[in-house]
Picture 1 (cartoon, rainbow, N blue to C red):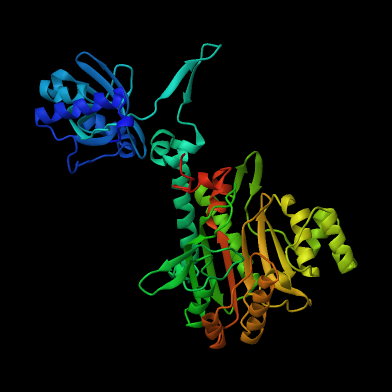
Picture 2 (picture 1 turned 180 degrees about the horizontal axis):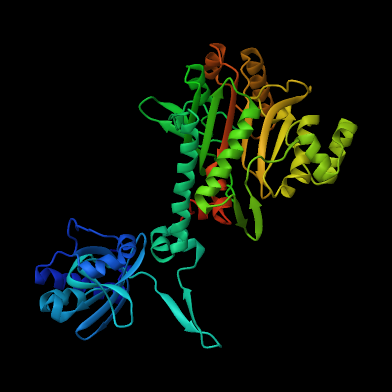
Length: 501
């Protein structure tokens, strides 16, 4: 341990380790045969107090109060906390020495029976105590103070956000509500997986290290493979590989995948995030809308027991189906602008008046996309589907079957955030090549985020891609919404942090 970390508390705990050695006690045994966790003990309270069945319980010491020959402590496991009562006369002098050398933060195991103390607290009456892991570094302590009305207020000194993200293990050990968010995250992912498998989808895994990146407008992380002497990219999206699975005849596929985008960090963006993408042969974007709504509804119920969630004071209801507007309808409804009646120059002027800006060349479609961002996006609080974007939106989507200049794309919104992206996938190889070549040209023209040409992917599409609907969405943003968390870092267990200076 680094010398600068050796404060008095650490020194005192290290001295106890030496004393354990002298006593011949292993402070770090290999295993403990736990028979009951706190949840099972509480659920079977009445029976256990009658039968006096032996129990073996373990957890982290979160409260410790020793008075002479008696010790009361609370042990905490993943389900909650429970009191343990140790009397020197019942465990014996030698075993009580271990109790005397216990500190807050240690993990201990207890063998005994269940009873109620005089004050009526359901507790383990210890017959034997085992040290399972001596914590040499003390956990921060939640302090109590008395307010002006004489009420006790607990305030947690481990509230500094930066430290909480860097030391998430302490954050979870002390703050139950933090751990609860990650338990809900697990339930959300489980609910999505169950829905897709129920619908006949197959879960697949595609490469994270790719010789060419694609599938999203994003800047990649670049790395180098020494043995092959080649440049590789961390994936920005799994789309082009999942389409290869459809070409290969798998028909319905999905993947939960870590995506990496070499871009800024803010409340809803992280350089590493979890995506979900799924593709279905013989389907289109209308079918994908139904899947999307159903998945969100089901995930919300899995996390909260209801389709409604209170997000930062706003009640949002994810019950399917959601209202649907074309992008042009939405700009008129929410932004009060009738783009169909405007010339290109009027659209450009309106965009600039509202503070919009485009890198590279101006086109009507790009102007409309920018107007949507400026006037509509922030107003879509309740779940809403926006569909039928201008062609410039993406090079991987089929053109609209009835309206020129548009594509069959939709983006779902809630809380003013884009929640995902979906297409009737482009499967015409001639058109696909033209659009990817146009992206390369636009990239050279100064646009920052464009798709590179991927000849291997083109070869796949030329081999025959059936009509297909596809969806991609961010899991982290979904978990934020469904667990009422304000920043993406609150739903990522170990978010990327700049090094401490």
